[in-house]
Length: 111
Image (tube, rainbow, N blue to C red; front, side, top):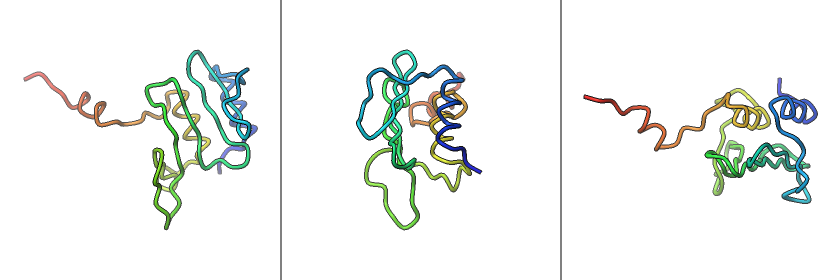
């Protein structure tokens, strides 16, 4: 069962985010913590934007039968969680975005 928008924003406040004084879009709600800003559209939860972090970008939910032609695709069916939970996980550190650089750094070893 996925979380509601109300639960999502409550959990964002719990991990230290607060509603930003500067809203990044009219059709979304922006929360910030230090230099990190997270914007969630008001009408749907299929996308979200994170700026100011090492994992900055636009994250888009993968819909079966459609190709994602922009942003970072997130297959929520494979993960078993909703997009709001993915956003919360990224912002709280519970989910780590694997980039090619991070994978290479984790597999380096000293011979």
